[in-house]
Length: 65
Image (cartoon, rainbow, N blue to C red; front, side):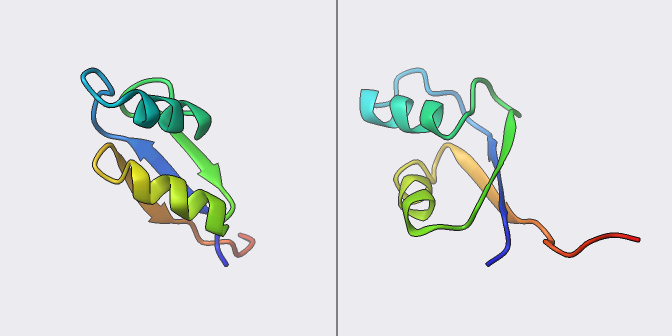
């Protein structure tokens, strides 16, 4: 499984407290903040919960050069 790049695209203001905590647990602090996570069932579950607040991209795990 390739790593996932997670980017916050919407504000957590007026979101449920549980969603705010999930976004924070993903390491995101503000809009356009990005983090890379391993593709695990736990991370996928967190992303499913806040899919309306984040954008997810698969990162090529291959080595360059």
